[in-house]
Image (tube, rainbow, N blue to C red):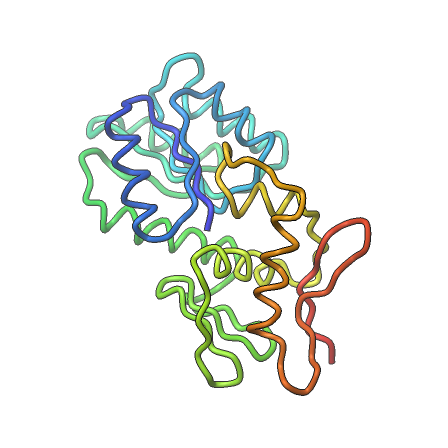
Amino acid sequence: MKILVVEDEEMLNNIIAKRLRVESMTVDCCFNGEEALDYLSTSGYDVVIMDIMMPKMDGLSVLKHMREEGNKTPVLFLTAKDSLQDKVDGLNLGGDDYLVKPFEFEELIARVYALARRSNNQAHDDLVAGPLTINSRSRSVVLNGEPIILTAKEFDLLYYLASNQNIVLSRQQILDHVWEYDYESYSNLIDVYIKDVRKKIDTGDGTKLIHTVRGVGYVFKVEK
């Protein structure tokens, strides 16, 4: 799962990112609304955690711009205790949830998972994709009833592909979503990880789940 944290208080921004990374989430961080739009224009996210009061461009303006551009990424607003109007304005503009400062990090994490499930039309943490059952919260994968072991990045890659069944994803889309913004791009990085994941999830009967689309990228597809 990839999260964008937009918070101008550097210490709080760093703490939120650290706690999310403990949950094995991929996290990009920025500190004002203009930076947020730059990040959103170059990468895809599962959830945006965003403060409302920020320099250069406030969170409500960022959200308005996102929705006008057709970006439906769930937005969780961080609001001050006495800013009822901000909460109302945020929800009216298309915000998805809000959390009042100060907050418990356990609640923040729970709300992030809930927004990601809602965005993927999941009622719970399990994503069923053909013979695979992938649990986003426990980061576990079961293949035909048998657990398989994946590294953190292998899980992120598989979850992203399986969450976008039948959608062809370019190598750049995968790199942008699964790795953090400042990750150095290597031309064969995606191919190496795809090869490793395939070894673990391809079934003995020859069934392939991750298919190569030559010249474009990859697609997760369950063939009947």
